[in-house]
Image: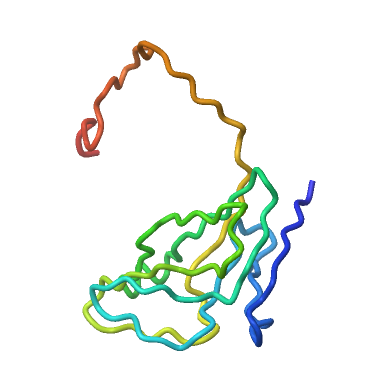
Length: 146
């Protein structure tokens, strides 16, 4: 089943339409629609030029690109970022430069990935207690270093 997602591109940005590099990729590449500098130690919103209309019951997750993280210490502050079905604004990518030098983003640079996900219908149920498990309430490193 193919889900159709409506996309509108910012004026003059048709060349930045999200694409998958390979047919079996999970994510669409998002590109910068502007030239800008990412200062060291700061989060900056980089505009993608992409506006989407997701069907109800779907979300888009904006995720980092591994090469930018490894080679340039760039990360997405809100990762993964969620685009809800009701949002109609431009998809912005909140990038953080953890490197030691400012990073130049050029128009057309692939800066993030977008995965479209179907959401399950979920109903929260308030109960008096939860069932036991092997882990219990342990978290935040409770299983030790592996």
